[in-house]
Length: 636
Image 1 (cartoon, rainbow, N blue to C red):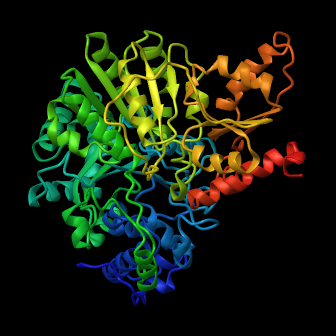
Image 2: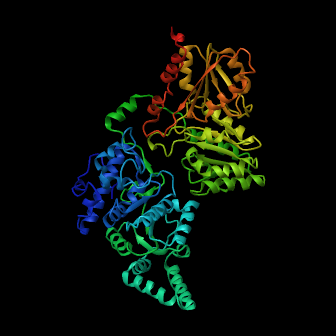
Image 3: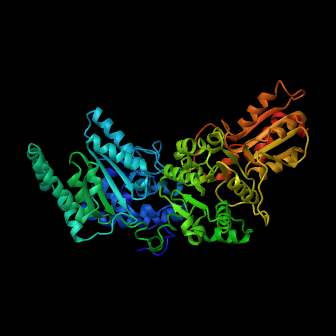
């Protein structure tokens, strides 16, 4: 049991000789427990150096070893869900010495990535995709007449999503060979681990039992009443000692509950069931953060770890002025509590992102108005729609990249019915080390094309509060999108106010060039405006856009520059272009050219967010350079 993160690389004699799962399979099974201890120590050391997800990874150390020991990877397909738990998998599949580069520019990705390794059979980041993807691979094996095995590993949290059950339902219909491993690390499903259930799990996985089971099925199927009675008796027996019934009804042969930290037992049961026919579900119980005491005691809080600073880094940090600005998530959480204290109709909904969205205090103080619907984004949005239909005031707190999963519900169930719902969209723009699966690069593009919806992008935390207040009181769907991390530290108004819908604010009056900023890049754009004597505008509203001001600026400036932390294609800059195109024949004397600055038409790799923005030309130097390239006389 570790109580502290190792500061020095631990001794890992066995692990150092494993450069691929083929090397792992050369080990005697008696060495696997020792290997698990080394792998856990090395994982803790690496994440301490780099930061990243590790609680889930600590919980699947033994399972990862057992899977690669029993199955012939990469020919046999292992499909991991989400990817939070894939660090041990990366270490065992040839990436051990590159682990200190994880989540850094040009280093290993934080999640499974098909371009990174042939062992990463499916790219992940969002949850609940593993069973669907594994079914597709199973069908490919069937078509090619391959004997390769397909295994999906999914957690109990990811199993709450409808997509997982859609795949389970289809798997039962296909009735072909697939193994689903349900990693239950939160005890949300299973509470009855013990000798009896473990005994029956081993029995159901045994070859004699399954030989008798398949044989009796053939014989008794000719006598339907007898087969029905036998099948029902088996269901009742399993239901007494395990939560098997739901999976059995979906067509799976269920095995569980199994201790997920008994590597020898996992190897035995996987060897027993790997050649069984049809859909199989193995239910294991693990402890998130296993082997690291702080993570065992606080699995949610220790879901991920920040990089541990060295002594020199700590000294340097102490010499620097500490940024005491709150995060945008915290600003949202404080505003939520403030509003709920005066409006009992306020209802806050989150799809398993309560902590990340800054809602912990709200949950504690207003438990009857807080709803965590688990990893079910589609349900979250339509649940809010039902509330709005009958007079409640729902707020959906959701990450930008997760709202994508509920796009149909946003259009069909909310906007089409013009329902009064506020979407507080966190993690907009680049998120840095988590990479493209978690970057909120597209929300301005996919939101602004939806009728009835207003879309706001605050430049600082004070404006964020007013926009949330404005959206809350707007009689229809509204969205406020804000980035991850620290706000600006600006002063906050004592009283909340409703903003004029669709009205921008000129922050600085200049000449020739007008810089139109959507969101928190206003601060860096201000430096360019000062240097070039340009007009600086906080656009605030992406939809509706301030057409009156745009028309005026087009008449009085040579160049309009749009700046946004969103893809250029279809984004806020496109809204400006579309409006100006309608003015070409109507506005006499309008000669303004336009530059759109934003994220490029590609998925950006992981790295420090500020460095990524600079590479995209979205820092002060990049904005200035783009303007001077168009109007070089500005610096002459």
